[in-house]
Length: 280
Image (cartoon, rainbow, N blue to C red; front, top):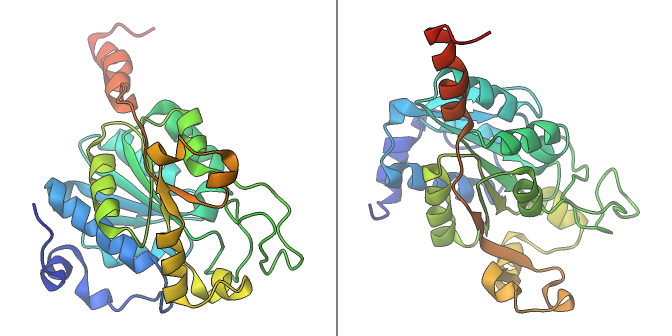
């Protein structure tokens, strides 16, 4: 299905009485939310069979605006709640919308184990390299030496590469895109949604209010331009040296390796055996 007019998309996929959204001017989260809504529409999912789960943070407000079954949960526990939803209702298309802090810090253990199980959840990480809602603290994806309210002299911790983390943990679909590359984002979200196992999309966003201002990255337009000028795809990056790809955003599909999905295995190896009386 081709992209439709924005006004029609809003009427079909959003709770218009909840708009306008709360995000700052120039925040990339609205762009990513719109791309996700377009992707859900494009793949043709029954709206009543879609469940979007979030935790706490700027990104986690997104499901409240979207006209699907939605669940706004506690900090870092979005994937845990989503796992429960998927196990209870395996026929649902379960989507997690989370942030870099929500997913990779307090929620990091849930992230890696959902990937290890390859449970059928699509996780979109709105990654803006900062805790925006709670005051600009540094997160697991804040670049080294960049400043934050909790790192006034610069962050000295190494960052998580969420694609590598998801791959190593067992996710069957892994990709990265940005708020600038909207057509690419829509296509990647579509593929992530259609993958039967655990899908992770590291969606690079921009936070001009806390991250950008604190690190003299310029205004929202300049931050978007930086995304454009400093993004290269994984295939190109493979032919480049470590110095050449330093500080670049590597986008595109990182992994697409379909594998058995947890709920299907659970049904066959546990539930069916219990119903047959085979279980010990």
